[in-house]
Length: 201
Image (cartoon, rainbow, N blue to C red; front, side, top):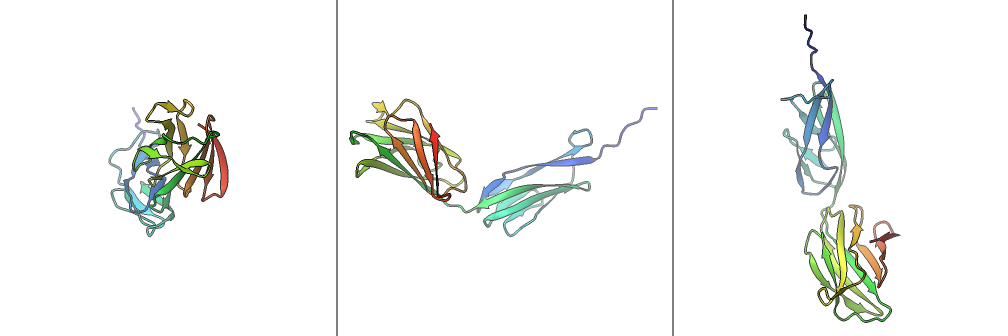
């Protein structure tokens, strides 16, 4: 006689954003798996939040971030539950200041081409400040990294051949980047951490 094992819920996997920003809305999903690791269809998922004042979740798994902090989004089905920690940050843009230093102190015609800012990509003028030149631009909340090229007269020349990339994490405030002509090395100062990191482009 053929014996068929009864399939029951063994675990739940939650798919969602671990980092959100105030006012953002995101759809979370829960995958219910049986004892064989196979998905169980038509499972009744019950959603909740450990701190609904920080992030509320609807019966359909729609999460709305409201206040900065850390909460856990909870999914329950068939007597089992799973949680996903979600960190919520303020919805603020940040300023990146790039300081460019040349030994000859000739800055006429130089600018910075930026992309991945989440706001306005393209050319940003370098303005001489003392013996260096600086460019300032804004980056959007939720940005993880941006790219930049220091160029002369709209691609007549570039300072070093490689593209430069800078990682920016949610905990960062305003960011300062120092670039010396002819070097791929960048000095990155993150205001929120009060420390300096050195990265290579």
